[in-house]
Image: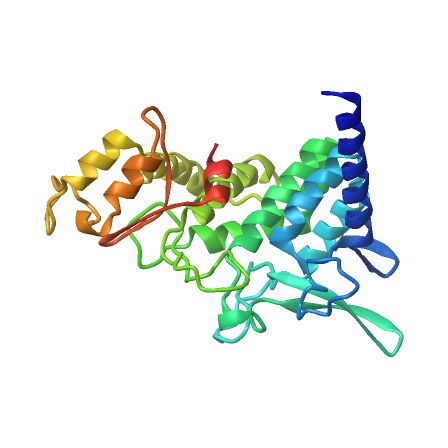
Amino acid sequence: MKREEVVIVDDLEKQAWEILEKSILYYQGRPIGTIATYDPSQKALNHDHCFIRDFASSALLFLIKGKYDIVRNFLEETLKLQPKKNKFDAYIPGQGLIPASFKVVSKDGEEYLETDFGEHAIARVTPVDSCLWWIIILYAYVKATKDISFALQPEFQQGITLIMELCLATRFDMYPTLLVPDGACMIYRRMGIYGYPLEIQALFYSALRSARKLLICAGDEEIVVGIDNRLPLLRDHIRHHYWIDMKRLNVIYRFKGEEYGESAVNQFNIYPDSIHYAKLAIWLPKHGGYLAGNVGPSQLDTRFFALGNMMAI
């Protein structure tokens, strides 16, 4: 790289860090996160919130730079926002959930955190990905600081356990993947990623592995066994059913519909005519492929989900 190019890269990095530092959110004098967007000229709704999914990338940057305090504060404060008791009310956040976002609110000289568990979100969608990101950030913090004692605190062990109980609970489902509502991992608009979107499954797998490393003092053997049982099943399921390359595409395109029984090849009853074979055949390389965006009854979402594929790697 030429000297001029190095100077340009350094200047861009400096500008990026300045913007990131200006976006830091403070609570009771301590940095606890970063707001969604930093633009003084804009007053967009909820852009003054700290989103758990957005802070994940910021947290990694802070950890790389050795700025551990903001990540530690974030983990401590968001854990306090996690509901610890079951409330049988559809309009109250369930036990174990981590909010999609939070903001600092001042009233009568007092500061407190105002959460959004989906009550204010577009379409009122519950954030499935937040609790998964939270565990991943916690594990990244422990790896960076080598401070395992932080995660071994009783409240953190309980927090991890509640999330695992939420994710591993028996539901009306037959697969090792995590069933979620539409838009469970996005902000702005309906994307048709309900069911078993790759984005969530990749996060789920990473969160399970992180939780397995961190759950040392919880004493809940059933949770640990549940994680150990789920991980290989989830991995194999994704590798087999979500992978698309030219060879797999040709196999799918020859599927017969309405197959029944254990010997059925077309297990999800996917209709080949619904797949844009010509476009995929042009786009797919001769050697290599990618993980499909979603697989569910009668449909195969062939969109390329960048986050899901990158996390899977």
